[in-house]
Image (cartoon, rainbow, N blue to C red; front, side, top):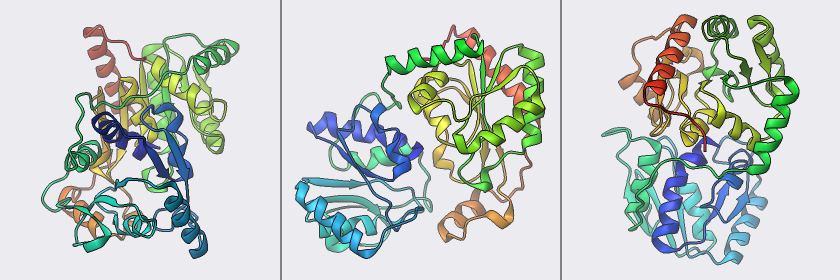
Length: 347
């Protein structure tokens, strides 16, 4: 979901520059956010074998190529992070007969790509993912003035969220804590979440809303129990539209590095990011935030030579987990800056 959001300014640039109709080919997880991105006209959902998913067999992949061929697309732009190869998707597009195929690649893709941008990342430079994707479409002549992350408002979700908060007796202002991660290597310790929550509750006297998916409910409930009466678990109770609205209403979101921080960036909501040092491209984009980094455990680090190169270049020093007092201090500083600027998050 976060990857799709970070690619959305580049998709807007294509749409605005060329009047394009945009169809997004993405994973089931990536497709969830598409109703809130106005630049996307249609979605094809597939679990492709070259990304982290359950994958598909060869027959299903051939069927997907025929589906794409039947849609008669004019062009494909392949967005990747610097550790991914665009060539599997380029081969799929070539098989589908899409005449214009653009991507970053380290090696010469010959006929697989019609518009090849040599990939200098991460060996010569590292750009934010939004910059990387915009750079690719700029090579085609597409550009955009407003390159922020943007999400569409959902009036119905705003109403249903208000009803749910009112039923729980939750008023504003409040702070969000979002502890769930999709990868174990990015986890921040439960006990630290509890201790940070206690400090935030004592200092600010605001409700602390612990959010997450239904699969993260047990984690959220444990953290709420450890914090005490000022904390409420909302894990598994909100749909994505309601969650986006919630992030837009909070005075500050405290989260690990996951899709939540990109939603916060789109809502211009201050965020304290507990940032496992994985991909430096994926920090919040053009929004108020504080980064509290920590090292990935050595036994969970990637085997990818590209990612290992970045780790050896940028992450040689072992960085411990931020202490709970650092988390509460970061929230305090962000709230003070927001107050000084007369700033309020939201649509």
